[in-house]
Image (cartoon, rainbow, N blue to C red):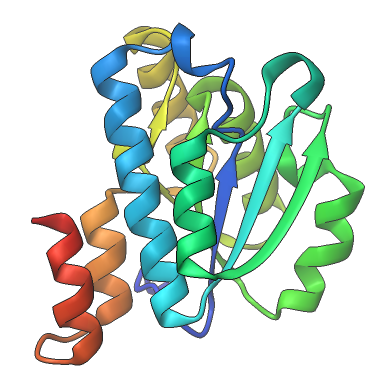
Length: 188
């Protein structure tokens, strides 16, 4: 099996990066997760990947953070949104209806928290036959132990542990293009 990401096969799924979750996360870690997710959103927009954004119980946890919203608005990706109460974004009726219409079999999953919603989403996507890539630098949990546990469970469930830079350069596939010039600036 090839682990190579393809711009014609991949979709970006941003899981629950919400206002009221932010204060519970380690400050330097959450800043990196937001920045890396912004890089992935801009990459998706530039390369034509669909972007899905979920919110876990927004009445209690708030909306998607402003920095992510700003990037989504500026990048104009092919965007799908839904709210959920299920921990797994893949267990929702919205995603069950949407996924087959995308015609994509690779999922890049980012978000919060690594050991709950991100893990369960990745696990369930793998169980449905999708190839799932989870950038470790674009997921977080309230504690390092839970982040490590989530990252390990994600890998054991069959998802591919990766990083933001691996995803970007894999999707680009080569240097010297206009896409390379634009996107390589984001990760310097």
